[in-house]
Length: 190
Image (cartoon, rainbow, N blue to C red; front, top):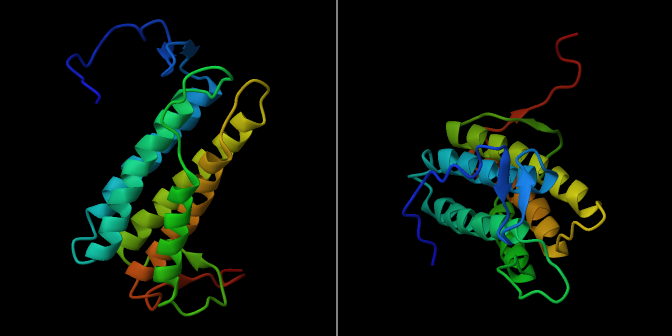
């Protein structure tokens, strides 16, 4: 259980922040930026959910995703180290659930013959924005994983990859199952 009695601590006034392990890092550190961008993804999903009152299935899926993203942030905030007690980690079962949700939503969508532009409905536009933030988080986590002595689980990377796919499919789904998708027309404005 997390207890937040005091919101400001002043410990970050020197430009550092604490990882979940207690280790202090600069606030611009790649690990801190990665889990900060996961948090940004979560906030973007929260905004998208404001437009989903009429779509309870997708809203419930996104509620689970938001909780998973806190798990992912906790995972990234405590680097895996040999010999240390295991902390909260993203699991492949969470990735599997995203795949099941993607398949369930995608079953109702017509195949695409063009890329689509973010838009159509407000909910879809916000889901596409969340997707792009998620892709940025994924790029940062992959870059972090490529650094020596910066362990990242495969499941964490897989989760972000699937989540961006899920957000794409969810965006199409709330666009009347793709009927309101805005198709890209290559070279249209030449």
